[in-house]
Amino acid sequence: MKRNIVIASVAAAALIGGGAATAVAFGGSGASDTSSAAAASSTPRSGVSVPDDDNEDAREAKAATVSAPQAAAAALKATPGTVTGIDLDQDRPGLVWEVDVLGKDNKWHEVTLDAGNAKVLNQRVEHEGDDDHGVARARAELKGASVGAVAAAEKAAASYGTVTSVDLDDDHRGSAVWEVETVTKDGKEHKLNVDPRSGKVSVAPRDGDADGDDD
Figure 1: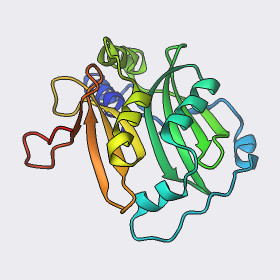
Figure 2: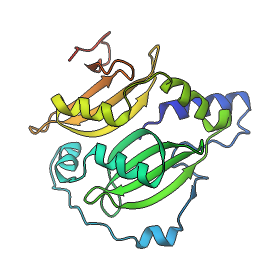
Figure 3: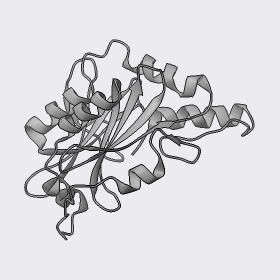
Figure 4: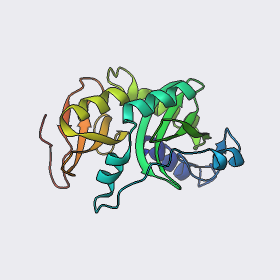
């Protein structure tokens, strides 16, 4: 999953500190599991099978019976806080949702859930470099936002099909947006931007384009 805000903070910390800071961004080395590895590996999954199609995102979207908003809701029950990312992924040995949560404890959490039944398979606390592990920057980006990750997913899904990914993205922009990826029934993929303050949905600009088309 892209975690642009955290990665940017880590890169800055590494440059300033000469690489002395420990930098792990959502799932890198150094993450500490809140559950034991043995428990995670023995947790039963629903066994969601993914059809063998050419379009990976389309077949994953078709196979998942749990939606992005449902996965986010289940993750927040396990770890209260603010969802900053949702991603559908073919994991070993099944299809899962990975949800990033900025917890009320001011720590980053990654919650992995079965895409077939929303059962929590694993939870872990992530560690990054300085700046309170990127928490301050993320809080600043979300300040004044009226549209969260779940609402962004619902807005995108209303016109553009099944959501497969939601990320808070601030690359090359004056302010952060929710970057949402979807797949329609015909297998066509869409990348959209949802404004966290206005809720406006627009098609993400392609490389070389100045602006996308508004919805």
